[in-house]
Image (cartoon, rainbow, N blue to C red):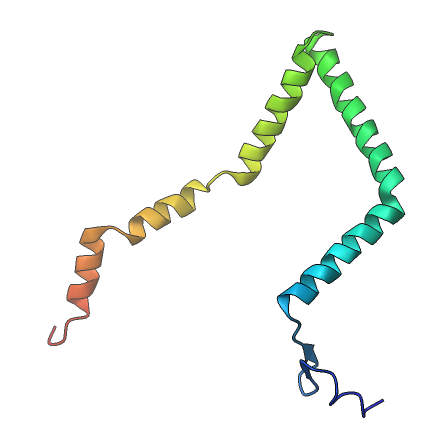
Length: 115
């Protein structure tokens, strides 16, 4: 078994890491996705249909049985996306403060020799 350690390219026995080319990692991930879809495909579709039916019935309950239900689903999805991917105002202010020219000049003056 230990004879194979030196023969596996990219294996570092000291740290136990295996360096793979990017295309090998991508092919392995694609194969894993395909196998998962084959194994759980029917269950995923059934679960998606149940979730969609639940959301549509909830929207119909709230907004009536009009075409607003589908529009409401799109708006709810957009709102969730905005909440999940919104920019944090604190980090936006911190980024803005990083590039404040007065602060940069003050820091540069503080680092000058002889002060």
